[in-house]
Length: 430
Image (cartoon, rainbow, N blue to C red; front, side, top):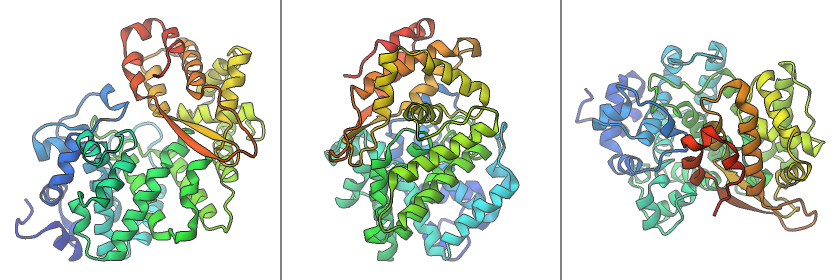
């Protein structure tokens, strides 16, 4: 066990963090971040969390004696800092099957982190940034800062403003603390995962307009995102970063690279940046034998976003999405394409269908291949209703409106839906 006389701060500052065992590190986290871990105990799990079996020996069980989804996610992500820095490829990739992360990519990931964490103080700042990243999912915290729970980034920022995040106060370097707060500000507007999954629109990238010199803050946001994705399935398989497979690694690194490139420009063309990311995904599908989709064609661009939402990597799966999309009634397809074509920059208010990828994943869960298309059809019809007649209005002030799809998870997990997917097509959000 960890020496009770030595705190996490001391151990990191003495460069001893990577010499500790995983169990010792978990004990250090437990002692250092009691308030934050209690928030995570109360956090609402993500849409897909409820669909999986809980594992034995999860970080949460080791620390608390029972499982809490968001505790598992966060603690696994935090352990991954150690795995990456020390070069523990075997542990990091434990539990990965299809598309296992290649060793050369792990080395690239390690270099990415080492370049951005030159001092022990930087390592500690990243640990804190990751520890606090999801505490805004706690309903009680959201109520105490009088902010709607659905935007947990805003909840966290308000909690920081009110001095309710003690972990942040353990960082004595004010510049590093400021960088974390700036990274939270970015995160309250821009979720890199929502770009990778085709969920958000270029408007959210405005958070990176670099008049405030966001270099260090962006690096923190990028590292937190990569680690958070790595721990995303920890509630069912805590052995390593099961989600950070080779395709996922490639997709996130490409998004981060493009965002960083455009962030540095004097007048970033965010719609162009967004389309470059979609074009990268189109090229990958083309290399797998699927027809090339151009972002210049709004129908094909909308289909590309749907393929990103569905985390589609193969020609066969892409063809199922294409069939469902092509078979939509003409008026439905037009409305869906129009809704998905608003950038939220000089073309009116764009809709962000929050949690659409998670809902889509549940829609398709356990559905045999030959029955997939009707379920996709129902999802696309439902999504058309979410966009609610939105369409590009060139010259109008840009804005972004979130519509939270999480309330639909009960319906898509129900036996009735599995028998008759059409009930989703007719469903509407309140």
